[in-house]
Structure formats: structure tokens, C-alpha cells
Length: 361
Ligand SMILES: [Zn+2]
Image (cartoon, rainbow, N blue to C red; front, side):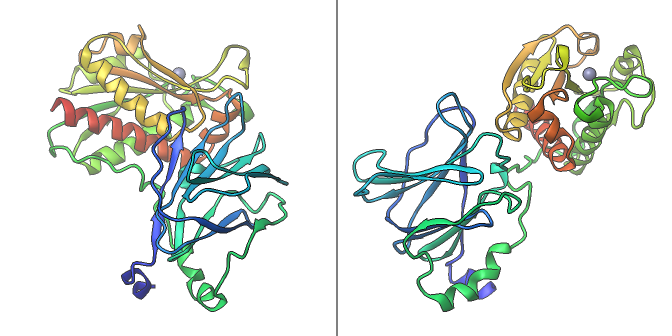
């Protein structure tokens, strides 16, 4: 495998995520020769050698479902649409503009995709693959042309793509001056007050405590001093949470919560961050909000807002209250149940905090 890497034949291609609707320019230098989507959810491509591809993902909107596409140079002769099956609605081959080819895979509604973990892997100079969906979906292979040209080579390379992935590679935490900053993290609720109760009985107190502990660990590793207002299921009123912060030299206060909608509406999802006043609080809220949205694709951005919550109103330092999703929302709850998503959120919150320190100093 090392030899293979040295030969520079092994390439990773990042997938651009379009959670809103901006479009990045396409840069590529080769044409699509063959493609196939296998029963295990892996898309394979064959292109001309040394292709510089770009891949994209966009969440569903009013017009279409979740879409993944790859752009290639060289104009396609016959634009066409191929009916999908299983989780795939259809595959479209088209020319988005003169001299280009676009392969679009549109998924059916309710397909569970994890685009944040997607990686397009270059197997050799003209072959690529990316895992798009889980093999739990039943799917009949679709494709055009021969993806596997030289049988021998392919076998030899097959192990390489199962290289262990770093789940958090996309979230590099910034470095800040060590032993210089202090943060109070406040996991909302606790003890007899579970906070919001969501789908399947998921409790806010449990979710936010776990996220808070991971934030503490991540920040501590960066040399930031962190104090939690609670570390277990205790009943802690709001005034002591504030005095814990006010009695220290904490630079910032971050209260972590999860939402519930009135009437427990499953269609209401989203993330929001509140600050009470001041540009520092607002900046901190903006940094955190931006990062938590990145790890919650498809969940609405409810924005950075001013709020008069007790804990952020009465703390003396810049203070924010983060709502990491709706436990009553179908999309958010399904994620908040999972430790992997809680870790991602903790990473995102830690990243927002470190970015704030980096900026404010
Ligand atoms: Zn709460």
C-alpha cells in the first residue's frame, strides 16, 4: 500500500457539500468513459487518465431530492435519463454547459445519506469510486460501459479503498495560545429536570451533558481551561450556573441545549444560537452556529439571535446559548440519538469557540 501511495496513484477527492444553494466553479480536465452503481451502494467511474474531477452534493429542495453529481470536461453527445431503483430515483447524464458532461444521481425521499463521510477515492489514474449508500438498501446494479478495464490491476488495488477514515478530518481544530483562556460550559437542565423529551423518549439532559463533556475534553487538549456547571444528573438551578461563571475569570460562557417544538411537530428541525448583547457574544454565537450547521446537513439554520435567557443575561462575560437541534424533529432526533453526531456537534462547538479566541485574542 505504501508503494502505491508513493506512486501518487492514490488520490482522495473531497465532495463539496451544498447545504444552501451556492455553486462552485467546475475544474476538470478529462471525460467520463464508463460508470456503474453497484448493489453495495458504490459508484464506480472510469475516466481518461489523470483526470481532475470535482464532486458535489446538494440537499433536496422544492424541485428535486438529494443529489450527488460529478462534472467532467468534454461534451456529452446524448443527454439521457436513466430510471433508478431502490434508494435512487434517477440518473441523469447531461451537459450543464458547452463542453461539459455532468453525471447526476438523484435519490428518493427518505433515503438516509451521510454526505459528510463521503470520499471519492482514486483507485488508479483513471478509476474512481465512492460509497453513496448503505448496502441495507436493496438496489439493482445500473451502469454504462466497462468500468473495469484491466482486471488484474483492480484486484491488486481493492484493499486500498478500505483505508481507515478519520471521521473528523473535515473539522481541524485551530490552535490557540495555551493556558490563556477559560470557558464555562453549561449543560442545560439535569436531575429531576430532563429538559425536552423527544422522539423515542430521548432526553435533552443526557444529550447536552454528553456533548458538553466532549467539548470540555477537546478544549482541554488545546490548552483551554474548562469548567462544567454540572458533570452528572444533578438538579442545578439557574442562579448557581451563573455564579459559577461570575466567580471565575472565565472568558466566555456557553450553555448547551436541545430544542422541542410546540406540539412535538416532527417536521420542525434546525439549529440556533442565542447571545444576550455585545459584539463579542454575537461573534461567539456566529462562530458556533456556523460550525454546528456544517455538521448538520439539511437541518435548517434558525440563525443567530438575541435572547434574554437567564443564564446568558446574567453572566458577566460574553455568553451564548446553543440549541443543537430539535429532539422532537424527525431529522434532528435521529441524529442526536447517535454518539457519532454528538461528537461532531462537540467538535463543531469547540471549533467555534477556538475560532472566537483566535479572533478576539
Ligand atoms: Zn433546554
